[in-house]
Image (cartoon, rainbow, N blue to C red; front, side):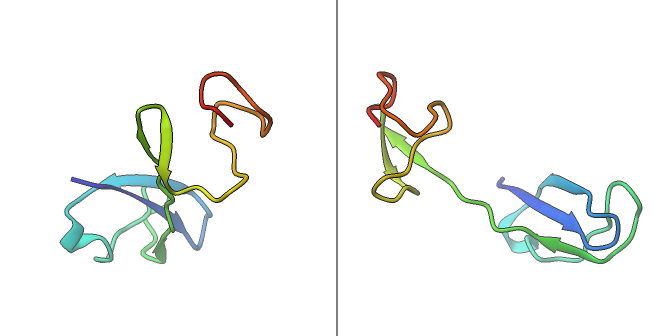
Length: 76
């Protein structure tokens, strides 16, 4: 099952919930304050294959393990 990221529009708490895709936008209470004004966040994913990003990156983007320059682990 996918992990979805949510944010409470009242207390601004960000949290994750594992739930079926069919329930991604179903009503949900905030884990911190219990308020029902919760919105699902846009989550970006990067797929790796053979040590190289195959999706989720743009031309000059760096990976999470380097500071935007060239590094030996990811090839950026």
